[in-house]
Length: 296
Ligand code: GDP
Image (cartoon, rainbow, N blue to C red):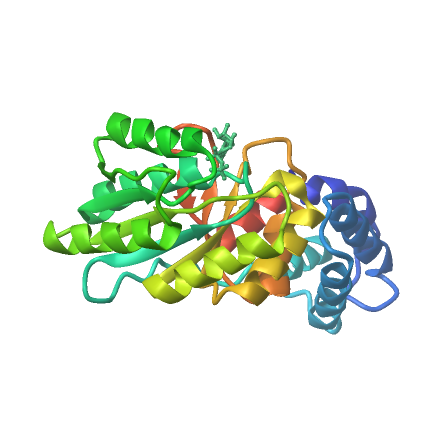
């Protein structure tokens, strides 16, 4: 993870001591260090460039006021700009519709869709007292349906059974019907993933999305895949009216750059982050907290 940028900057911001203002020449080294740290963390290059330009603009001419030293003032600017880059505030899940509110989970295989569907169901039940129904539309891998069924059972979440002889759309619509009849507040639809983006898979999920009209279409992406995460997000964003992103595996040794790039590149908010394999390892994403974590 891109932890502890502050420590990394400690060397270069020493140069700022005794300066009353941040100027183009005295922040040059610090900017270079931020740029390198972001690139090493696998943040997409255009995002890095824009970000550095923003930090520079915001820093220049900043009076160093009160008992802040110039280094702290610079770090403060980086913190504010990082927060802005990631979307400023937490974007909550939108469930304001006639129940059941449908949440469609999209993403590549292995991104964490099934695990996250379970985590999200648990979180909605515990934090918002929602009655949730889980369904899998992955008709290509019986093991995937079984994985969700087992997870639902463990978490004591209602599960709508499906099998691989059915069409994904039929499964989803039947689950929707069932959820309506049984007064579920939320229906979480897990979908098939592929190892890479392919046209057939995109077509299928587009059709599912059109038939279900989910209030939330969430793109689930593995943070450990770095720049690829951003490229896949872009492809899914072009195919589907995404309403948000869930970034998984931020607990891994990911360099974390995806957290900084995804919002900028897709224009979609990161709503949740996955922070462990366990059922409670899902947290609302708070840009400000993530910025603090990055700065250490
Ligand atoms: P799917 O193919 O997209 O449905 O992916 P799965 O839900 O099967 O997840 C793939 C692997 O990633 C599993 O081993 C999960 O336990 C793991 N995983 C998912 N989310 C997280 C996370 O936030 N942190 C960690 N460490 N592992 C995760």
